[in-house]
Length: 101
Image (cartoon, rainbow, N blue to C red; front, side, top):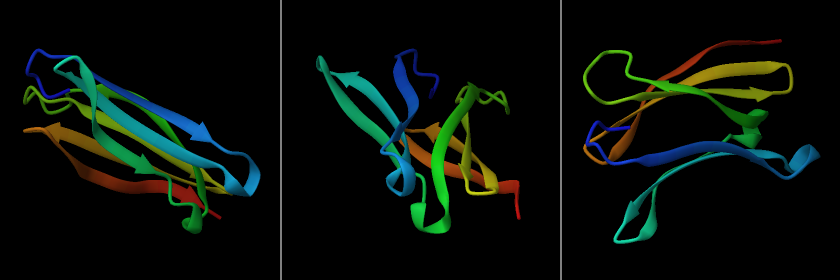
């Protein structure tokens, strides 16, 4: 993700069902043979979003660090989230777009 030549794992998952459903994004890297959590984000259930899906990972701006693209979906609403990983840290680059009723 950050162009250092070492592999990081990034994924999105759904836990729970119905009103208790939550989307979860996790990123890990191996450190001394053990996984180390780099990133954790839950979809904001209180705002009506119940899923968080990873759309893809690509280095959009050609700076050597990849951007991760997510979509948060909920009851009649969705929005996009773009996250960058640089210098060992995740940062929100964009959140918005989408639509709601």
